[in-house]
Image (tube, rainbow, N blue to C red; front, side):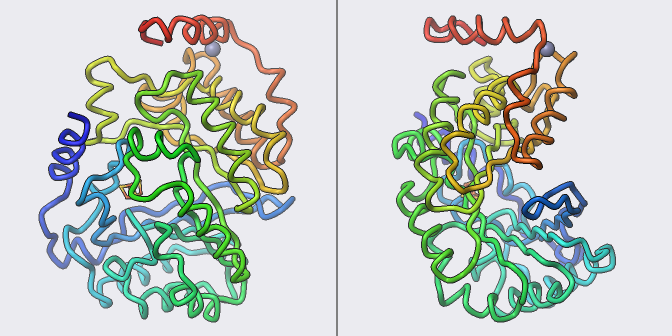
Length: 339
Ligand code: SF4
Ligand SMILES: [Zn+2]
């Protein structure tokens, strides 16, 4: 049942092939707060429009609706160059640049090798650190070498590990490869002299709130030696996903912000030398990680401040009446009561 649901959701969400106008415009661009080491910096975030993740066509991950933002076909080099030109018009030499596609920057079907080098080269001498995301099978010396040569600053390769539990990753998240492949890719990337970052998912479907916190905390400990940075990403409900399907039937609640606080507080001691951060998407919204509403903004600010400063002790001082509700909800969950 789960498999067929995942396949039909994956099929439904892929758009029809787009015309040239849509292909010349990137999906989105914004600037956000980040840190390079101790220094607070601005990060320029760009989401390119490509054919999107090949895995979304085959099965797709249970929480991922990114294929809604794709072309339904490969972008030509000229179309990618035009997206880059438009993005550069908004670039103000932010020191940190993050480039996403709705899939893998290193997959030739999404971004061809020459376009990849041209995109990276466009920020050479202007950005100090440039991040892109990829599935592990594409993080090879052959694909990374030319990019390393084209960018004199730090290249950071982000991998959506999500969890180090093989069962959770395969059966609940529906990822294409086992955790071992992601850990190995992190090692490969670092051996080439690049930075490696892993995204860890907080609260995949079918886990209780308490199981989800334990899953992330254990994953932080098991992934820390393979990555320079670990980012805890609490699930938010994206359109056209298995998670949305469950949410509409009352079978999924996005994680509490208290769970993000717990994951960071408990994970901090296991992070080794890796940076541990969380910048929740859609925080405080019904479809994103949220608490009672009254404390959400305050708790989100504290999570961001702790992430930027790498100081997690202050999170333990956060309080709100809803914290008791979070505790109570977690103790009822194993009995099948919705949190
Ligand atoms: S989460 Fe990543 S691997 Fe999974 S479908 Fe989305 S883009 Fe593809
Ligand atoms: Zn509250």
